[in-house]
Length: 321
Image (cartoon, rainbow, N blue to C red; front, side, top):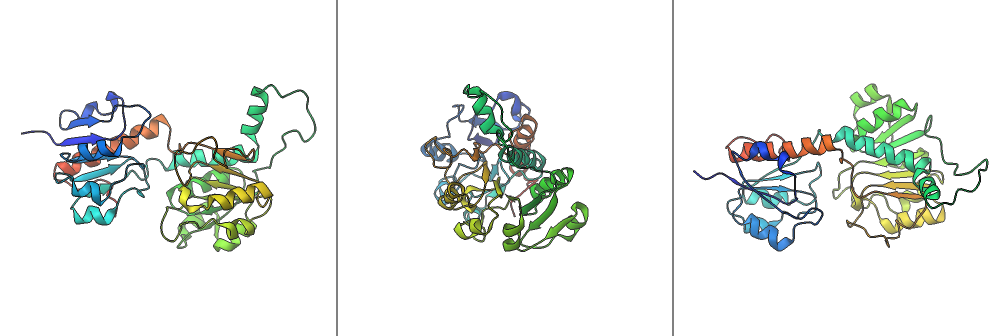
């Protein structure tokens, strides 16, 4: 009996999949830092029983209609904007993701961005490396305090709660907005539920960790940035499409807000000529929220375990509901 066929859309070191090779026939894209071309993905999916995908891989009606043997798509992310769930249901394909295992690591990155933007760390680092440090002055690279300030978290899911735990360690006043109140989180984290408008108007740091949905699409627009304090710092570790980037650029250039730390963008990857990249008051990262060796290893294992479960006739471990 032949083994179920799995196609992995990014190159992984063999050590990460070795344990699964006895039970699965594994193929993968071979180029280190290039996404799999669409034509190659369609070709490989045609006889695959499972796909191991990432956010830039579009799993849509076109692909699913050409993959009659496909049983499961395991997405190496919490988000699944790239997967057409209705099409998956139509073609009887299970979609799974990797929740929980990356929450703490992503929160680490989010709080790192907050600190880097507030204390102008990237700017100061560049100043030294470009040999511009000639003297010292009282307000030389003076940034903003983090301790005892007010943080407003938009989206109090697992990552939002993990951000709040870190904020508590800095004696920050924690407030949040979510589509529904989470009274248990309020008690555990000493967090206050506020409206979106109040959060924008009163927070020193606005951190968004919402998924991209019809409701959250472009929620951080010109009106939203106008409501923020001129000293506010905006952090986005959720999805680029929750932000109107032109409005954010305007807010940063005109002083409507003080600074931003961004791990995600509307279109990825962005290039060096992107308007946000050229701003000194913006820290831009290449979507590395969960990028620690330990967490990425756990994400790979969860994807492979989801695949193995489904092709073995069992339920997925973390199906997307």
